[in-house]
Each structure stands twice: as C-alpha cells, then as structure tokens.
Image 1 (spheres, helix red, strand yellow):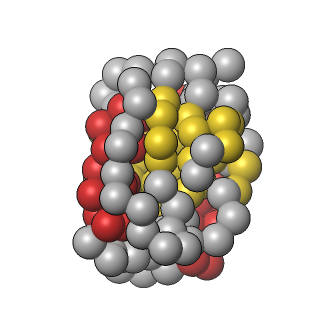
Image 2 (cartoon, one colour; image 1 turned 180 degrees about the vertical axis):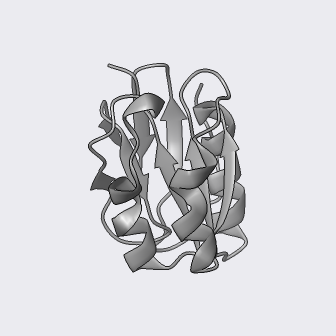
Image 3 (cartoon, one colour; image 1 turned 120 degrees about the vertical axis):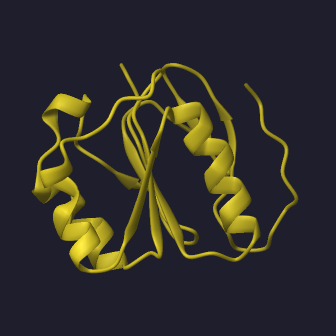
Length: 124
C-alpha cells in the first residue's frame, strides 16, 4: 500500500509498505528496521517476533522516544511482556500492532510532532 502524507521538513515518513518491504523517505528496506522521527533509519537484526530479546531494544532506550510502535509483521502478535519491561521502566510507552497499522500510526504521530520510534519487523 502506498501512503501519502504531508511533507514535513526533516522528519522520516513511511511512504509505502508491502509484506516484504517498507519505504522510508523513498528508500526501500527489506529487512527489519527502527525508524526514529528524524535521522537515519537503523537496521534492526530481528527476523521474527520469536527472535526478540531485551538487547534488541537498546537502540530504542538510547533514543528515548515517548512511544515505540512495534510492528509485528502481517498479523498482530504480542512480544513477551518481560521483553518490554525495561522500556516501560524508563517510561517509553509501547504500542503493538501489525506492520501496516504501525506504518500509518507512525506517520500520524510524527506529523503531530511526537517523539515516536517505529520498530518494524519485515519478513524476508
């Protein structure tokens, strides 16, 4: 699906997504990524929800967003609550949804000027 959003100067916007890729600022990504509101997209070495560990959230904790949008692939699935405990301890909210919904939600929140980060699982 192709997304159309207002062009906000200097912010990351997700322009399109499929089951196997996400396009951020016109650049297609075929592996899982972390998308901050501004700056470089970060490759995220997670292939599947079952592979997640607390260590995978270190870059998120360093960035200190208000909220993390966790896109779990084509279907909504939930990470083990223990993996998210440290995020909540440092007051980072976590919203989990399928990757398509996560892409749309990220764009809305970033357009509102919110400090949001998306963690998007992309299936190979």
